[in-house]
Length: 188
Image (cartoon, rainbow, N blue to C red):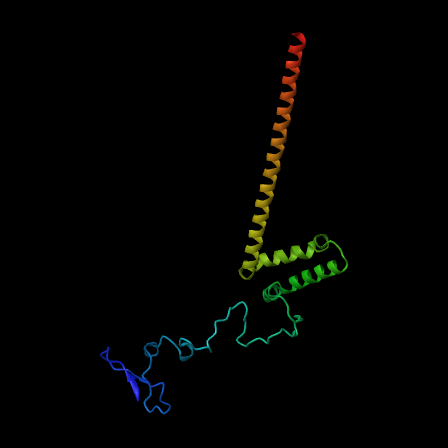
């Protein structure tokens, strides 16, 4: 037994959801008739999952919890690190990461000690800007924000200096006016 639609001149038969023993095959859905959709892409089909091409370079699902692999990835490695290692600058990033870890461990200045590997990593990222564009864009935005904050701080300091200079002039003027008044009174 099925449900029929009489609002359409063409009658479609759909299986009765209450009936377990359907003898009629359901008519194909309109999308299937047109070839617009594969059966796995039906609305509500949980087997179709969108995957970010950056996060999933292969169609094989990744094991949860990390666990490491032959490339030396650590268990629970951060998403940023995985992203950086997923592009053409993996070796440069690993060298930078090791330099930073070594400097932190030895309580040394990271900027000074890792300047060369940081420069190599930045150059590599620029060469592979198609992949590293999100990081490069974020870096550029952060630099612009820092520049904006420094300019605002500099402007505030200049305004404070001008205000101090103005106060000093007013005090000098007040002192000179008092001196003139005192002289007049003394002459007076």
